[in-house]
Image (cartoon, rainbow, N blue to C red; front, side, top):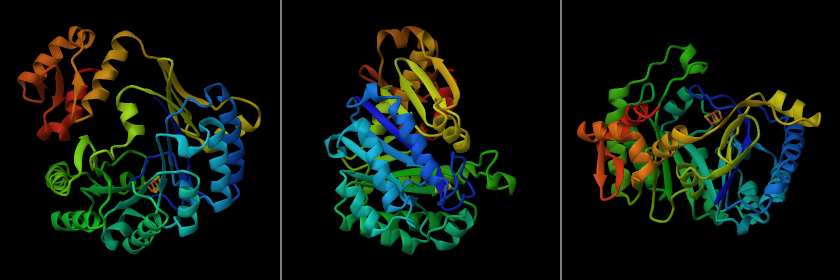
Length: 363
Ligand code: SF4
């Protein structure tokens, strides 16, 4: 199994908390970007036909015009073949730009999963996050996706937002669950350097976030969406196959600025600058690289362990991992952060929220 990730670095505006490689853009920069993406794609034609899943993320892929989206799909299909033949193909979308026409275009092209950004159901919170779409826009876009025939939809939700009470959060959760999503990705606010929130001095509230997170996870479970990864919940059979492949340390190719790849044991990522990306590829060069490293030996086993522990089913305690990390695993088991189930170990459900404390042991 090999995944293809395509990064579209444009958004309507920049959200206050966002540290993804994305910038406002709907104009003249999109077509040269697609030219550059086509050039980067051509560099990997030896991998054509080897992909099982696609994830087009960003950024906001739905920001592209219908003509640009159709072109993007044609570029992607030079590597994947018809999208309908893949096991899963996901497009990220945001409500302000996802029209009924674009929903129909994506579904008609064989895209079978869409991830739509919600974050909160209260317009005052959406405004304070700098989101360009309000809850009514989300409802319209969700309806357009269902009308186009999508039966596998994810929504993103956040907790620990400035000015968000526990009631606000549970109201958002109930509002979303009434729409019967197949999948929910659910994050506590993190304030990263370089974001507008960081510049404005917005603070994280870890204790409040943890309480909201536990209450939210319980509501999702009660609604039939089981947690299968630290931040991801799904109805049975609706887990994201593309992301499961990441957590299984499977191979993936990332195209576009800031996109990461893991191929032949080498982990690498393109540099984040869209301008530098377009300039290099349009001059016949490879995309500028942010880093590249061969993962071998202990580093490769540590990554396999950490990725596996992101999943609620944990990881099989194979000989090489146990021999390498016996001391750390024993310590985490006695501290009650890990638990053993047959030949598997996993992070205890109640401790998933502090999973970074577990991962720190292995680096
Ligand atoms: S829509 Fe998503 S990628 Fe774009 S600025 Fe907001 S959080 Fe970042």
